[in-house]
Image (cartoon, rainbow, N blue to C red; front, top):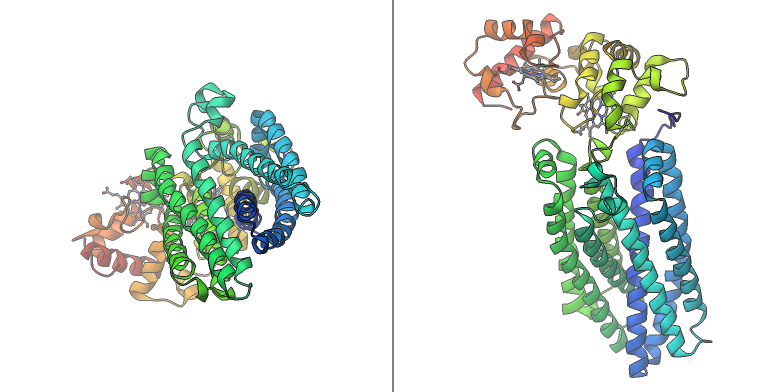
Length: 503
Ligand code: HEC
Ligand code: HEC
């Protein structure tokens, strides 16, 4: 906790996603585009195809603009943002990979210089020299991916590094190769999609048809490599992580499913408009392909980021910036004692450092709905038990007294009326709501933690007795603190659950 908390009214997750997805899209496209340009240039020169050379020159203009300007700016933007939102993890990444970054930046400088020479050299350079510069561009762009890939995959699967602390163990970690080949496939696919977008504007005719086919071929080839590697990548993640995700983490699993469907859609559009009916490819279809490509990449990156929960560097630093090795000490000594910067409002500071890197009070992953209508004792119990809740959260890194302080802060910002009044519910529906807030955060219906079986055949009295002793049923389970109306409704809902009927 050597850094202050950057308190912005936008969720960290959303901030990161917006800038990172855009950046990875542009940067992968920059690599694939380089390969596309130089390979196509070879073919065009061999065939003496002036029309194609002119097209490639045009393509390279927009290409250089987007990749150099947007790529470089968003790349710096990522450093800016991660330094603000995860200073501890950023520090760890810099310390462990300082030579990795230095190498990457050197490659990037070569890449930029080559891209500019390539673009300005179309008319003035000898063809052989021009193509040589094109190859230099592509090779260095790909090498910078090679380096970044080692660091990004390390964040999810540090492998032996956790034990050895060795640079190469972290770099060539379990997901390094699947991710590198996958990303190379993505580069090739995006290059094809982008060329389609540009060629879609050309007037209909033989040239357009040929170029659409050629570019769609890149799209299909890249997509095929990507699809195979996505499976390989999934398999390379430790089985314990994927098994846990399948059971308790809806976000990465949904992202994965969405990415598969998007890949199917991209493949179908590419085959239909690119290979079967290239004459029909209009700007709309090409733009749709580009949007789908962006969405696919977004879904994949979202998967990668969310399956890493509760960590930001797996096994090393939790999502809220607490180092795993320090967590027990924090729990004993308290979180406040570790903070170098405090605002004077302890409850708010504790909430910021323990929860706010993932949750907002309102907005993305809002906590207000989870605590509206609840009392402080319940909120404090949930704060202490975050590691048991759904969502695979880090353990609360503070003392019981600090959990009370967070509860005080949260209680101050939540609705204190009874649930029935807040949501205008009664009967079983009120019970369903009470269950979702008081029980469902741990006992997810249908998952391994589902307790519906235990309610089967229980009378209202039995269930009331169970609620009376709730705090003794399991470690971390909160005492039942609802009012009489809510209690009656919850019991009715538990009976429904026991019947296995309406869920
Ligand atoms: C590393 C990120 C992270 C941190 C830190 C974190 N949470 Fe969570 N939390 C999650 C995720 C992810 C979920 C699951 C949300 C979902 O399923 O949509 C979740 C779910 C919850 C839920 C269940 C409510 C719901 O809407 O599903 C509560 C309550 C909660 N968190 C409270 C807290 C509190 C209190 C803290 C701080 C002590 C905290 N969390 C810290 C990531 C985090
Ligand atoms: C903070 C997490 C948490 C919350 C919230 C929670 N429980 Fe639990 N519950 C547990 C744990 C942990 C256990 C013990 C381990 C187990 O049986 O899975 C448990 C055990 C139980 C058991 C005992 C099961 C058995 O077969 O012995 C029942 C019944 C139960 N909970 C019902 C509820 C109900 C009803 C609510 C809501 C009023 C609730 N729980 C809220 C964590 C929680």
